Structures are given as structure tokens and as C-alpha cells.
Length: 236
Image (cartoon, rainbow, N blue to C red; front, side, top):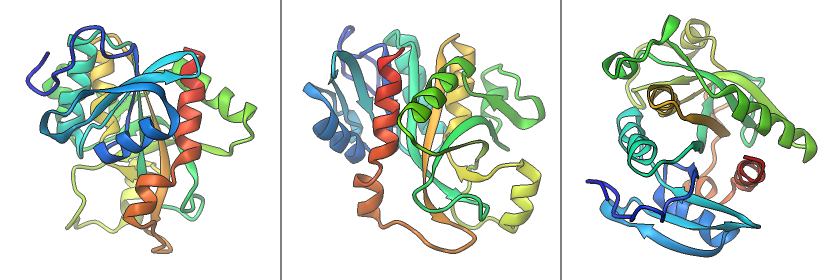
């Protein structure tokens, strides 16, 4: 047990899928897992462990922002001996190349955050890499399942509202096609603790066209992304 997770040792699988929204974690478990059980509900951050086919998987929410995923992923890696975390989340598009509903795999994450520095991880040019071997499995699985996926740097921003820079300026500065708020912290923790991490995203809104999914769509219409993560987890 930890301050934020009441699961007992052995109740968390070696591979964990992490959406931001705990209600999305609940939907994922109900939709895709068999023989699952809730193993955590502290602060409403649900975690469920069950089987996808014959593979044991845990699905747990991580909340919003680098600080939040930083806490939950660190505890999973450090206290529960988790080997791999795959974030499955939403992102906003900076470019016409990425449309609402498209899949994105994070090659690496750019952030202005000081999180990595504070835990002693170098972020060269403000970038931290995802785990290349995990990304290769995901890309291979996407190809096998005829899923189109963009492989890109993502911008992990600390700011959702009130940013002062135009998004086109941020796109150029960060060399990112999409923006989200968590991958930088997850990747930093994985490097710090010698673990593996990846981020799969679905574009939920476009800063270019202003098209956006509803809150209900974000919770329930990410099936391709979740299935890709689960099918990839089977190979790990």
C-alpha cells in the first residue's frame, strides 16, 4: 500500500494501462477485461486488474498533469514492481496533419516543466524519450491491425488555460504535432527507475479547425487506441 493506492502487493499487474480519467479506466475494464476486480479507489482514482485474453493487465487512472501522473506512476514502478506503463490519453492537434480521431504514438516528449530536473533526470533540449523497444512493439501491432498511427514528438504542457503564446509558435518551438499534459513526467520516472513507458494518444480536438470530441466521446470512443495498447501488451 501507498499513500495513494490501497492495492496489496500482487494485485497490480506488471503491465499497466493509464488513462487520465478514472471513469475511463472503469469503462476500459468493463469493456475489455475479463475476471477483473477493483484494487484501488483512494481519492476516486480507480484501478482494476483483470485479463485481456490470457494476459494480466491493470488499468488505472492517473489524473491531470505531470505532477499527478508523476505520483501515480512512481508508486506503481517503485512500490508495486510494475515493469511497463502505457499512457492512453487524449491530445490536441497543432497541425492539419493530425485530425480528430487520429492515433499518435509519442516518440518523445518536450516540456518546459522542471519535473525531470527535480528528480535528477536529464532532459536534453527539454526532451525525454519514450522506451524505444515498447514503441517498436506498438508500431508493429498497429501495422498488423491496419491502424494508421503518427509517430511524433508530443508537447507536455503545464498550461491548459491562459497560455500567452500562439499555438503555431509553440508548434515550431517544440517540434510537436500534438499537445497533452503528462508524458514528460511518465517518461522521466521510467528513466529514473529503470522501467519502460510509452504514450498512445487519440486526437480529441484540433487547435487548427476547432473541431472537438464531447466529454462523453472522450470517455467511450477511444476503442482503437485501447485495443492497440492491449494487443501490444500481450506481446510484452
